[in-house]
Image (cartoon, rainbow, N blue to C red):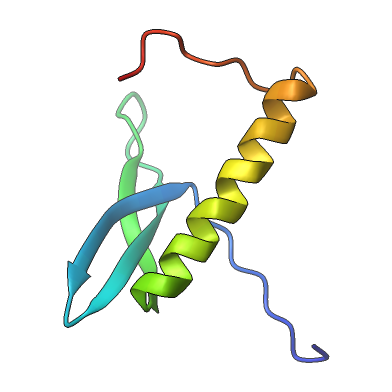
Amino acid sequence: MADKKEIFADGIGQIHFAGGMVRFDFVTLQPQPEGKEPVPEANVRVIMPPQGFLAAFDSMQQLINKLVEAGVLKKNENAK
């Protein structure tokens, strides 16, 4: 892990399934002329097999549950 790299993203612009792989397109918000909303711009893509996607989803769900328990996040009771 000596060559460890950090990547910042404001969010995920798209998640899609193509070629048997799950693809995440991460975006960063790019500033616009004054008064206009920042525009999301794709800057990196992560590609993983479906099994890796499910494992990542499970890890994220566990973290969400811990953040809800800690009061950092609140459940949206209206979500479907």
